[in-house]
Amino acid sequence: MTIFLILLLLLIILTTGAALLVVRDPMHGAVNLGVSLLALSILFLVLGAPFVAALEVMLYVGAILVLFLFAIMLLRTPLTIREEPRWRRVFGGQRCWWFC
Image 1 (cartoon, rainbow, N blue to C red):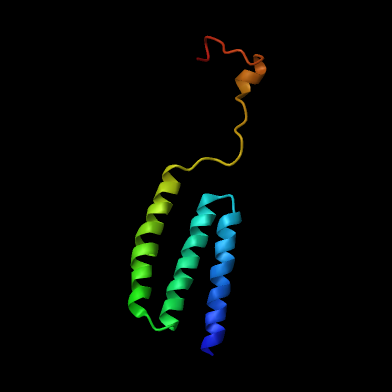
Image 2: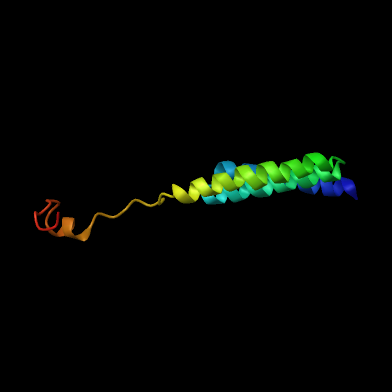
């Protein structure tokens, strides 16, 4: 029974780690990192290291991942290229003095 749980946790850790490298949205990457770290802490619990599992949850998931999420939300940049304003298209790209 425990070998199946260990293999399932290892599969979760590997897939979320690979998804962390592939996704383009930083918020999705942070969520993948959080799932990977939580699965790693459960793996530590299964292997008989409850103190290390508690440290993993408190230190990495509770502090560092929250710091990453906070920084991502503060520095959030759009992934799409912003379209040029309508007034620039109307006036041929020239800035007019009454729109400045």
